Image (cartoon, rainbow, N blue to C red; front, top):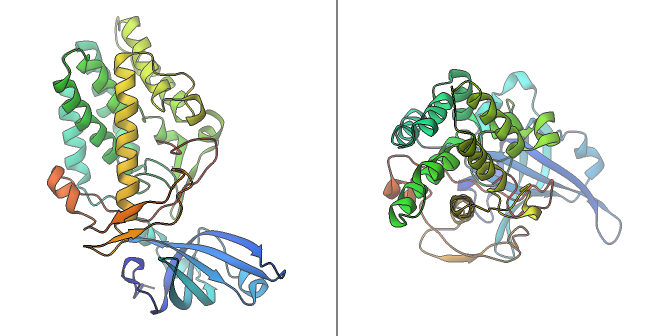
Length: 350
């Protein structure tokens, strides 16, 4: 079963019939006590919120998050944002659809991005740090997970290949900033850029339909997992300097910048401050660009209230691939996303 309509092509007033992945389901009641359903549906091109106002009990039986559903309804603009008023929803048997077709993925060339990241690692002057970085990038099992993993469950770079894309962007930024400020230890900063999120390959699980947290991810978090992974690699490198190991671990543990954003410690090294800003910069830009990709080109439009940023955004429409074509050889696919808060954090899993 294949789809005939993509979320990014749906317009106000359009009658919609198609197959989508049901990402989220919530039940609530109107002020009059009438139950209704709120659905989050998705495909490779984006996400869309839909609401079922009538027969909520009946249609709820057809709704199972993580499974494909056929939906019939009408698109409606509400306060400047598109939503779907759903009349019917029916569960699709698993054997009738390939759920992978609904999962968004980076539009960049995975192998090209991985090669560019390795070139940054090879360009590190410090011999010990270079060995450590290449131990990761030459580990076939790790690299396979790293190239497929998203950078978050539903925030920035929340698509297949998103972790590699985000890491490469932070490495590019680190390379530029280190060139501007000679006081920065480039080797150390590049180590932080490449390794800061390695724990996400274990924190996040990628199923046939959705991204979610593993048990280890929920219990430990990607920063602690990442430090353990780094220590395991370091233990296999003869006479790895203890002070460098300590500093790299500090960069990983502090890269969210503040305790309330999930960091076990605050940035206390020159390079740790820089890494926090660069990581945050790339995450915010990706988040805003994916929202902007939903706005018609050559116009501005107010977003819905963004809880994680505590503000509305006045977004300009643009081509979803324009910026990345200018920035480098890889491309990014933007998709709609909303915060998924599991702990106090500005950006869950930045």
